[in-house]
Length: 289
Length: 134
Ligand SMILES: Nc1ncnc2c1ncn2[C@@H]1O[C@H](COP(=O)(O)OP(=O)(O)O)[C@@H](O)[C@H]1O
Ligand SMILES: [Mg+2]
Image (cartoon, rainbow over the protein chains, first blue to last red):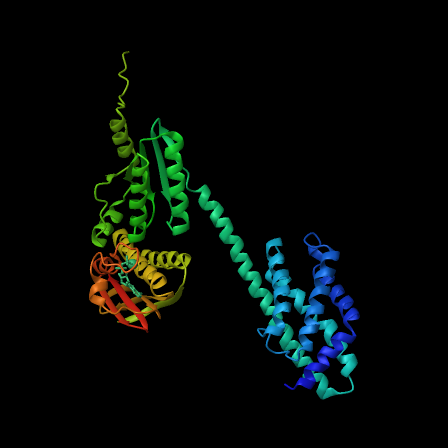
């Protein structure tokens, strides 16, 4: 790769920026014709003009092979923004990559026009341009993927908040039914919810039901113990229930002990215990017919 | 003893620990391991995977279904290229932790499975292999 060849590309881009932009826009409008709901023509024009200008100036640096180099930083960050906004707007990865790939056609026909008489030169520049645009296209796909993952993480976080409800069972008794895996993000929310509910309801007893937790490893056990200790500091007693037989056996082998924490087999047992603690009695009505 | 099925999974985040655990469980359920055996293996796997993420700075896990001489088993090999463990005896001791854990992960994992092997070289990384036979 000589400096001279890369200057040919930069030179052609610079001299024909406007017609290339117009042709590129036409390509994109055709490719995205079904997506007019997602992006306006004016926005597309602005995005395209911005990127083409940065792309041209990056090519002028002489480096048209390594897009991780500093001279490509601005182009890539611009492209990254386009990809991210498309990912959140609901464009598919291929629709996002179209932004770059649709530049090929107008760019190549311009190269043909300019270098038509020099077959070797044309072949070389076509190859250079293809490799370069392919790299940039793949880059948009990578950014798109990462942005989608972010969206999913956000949605998960929202769901986690929904899925850790504290319910009031009786005056002075609340319950926290835990369902699913307990990763650290979620346990913090759970703990906050539980402590806040203890305060809000003035409860003396909090029942934590782990029937829906598939694994209790040392990390989960530690969370549960922390929760009990924190509730205790708030003046409430925590009862853990719903430890299934296979979990109990596993905990014994692990060597984890819940020590002086009250544990009950089922939520019903825990509630019966809680009633006794607050001095409530539940009895069947005797029929007198 | 030959591996009839094998899969390597990355281990760099909480989500990947959960994924490994779930895969271990579904492989065992397919082979009709009992619920107790499934839970024990999943829990041991979880401990090793978390160590690889927390202390090893991430790594990978290889899941293998073993078959031969009339028995079958499942093996999980968790590997990282982290700082390694200088004193394995100390690390295996119950309640020893260099972090904020309960210090029961390694010892507990060993008690939960049939075969347990640990190799570690300071500066190079750690490999722990656990197997449950049926
Ligand atoms: N993969 C690893 N890489 C480096 N050190 C480890 C690794 N796994 C365990 N250790 C060391 O062994 C100690 C004990 O581990 P473990 O029994 O799981 O308890 P905990 O995770 O609660 O500390 C850890 O605190 C750590 O110092
Ligand atoms: Mg551990």
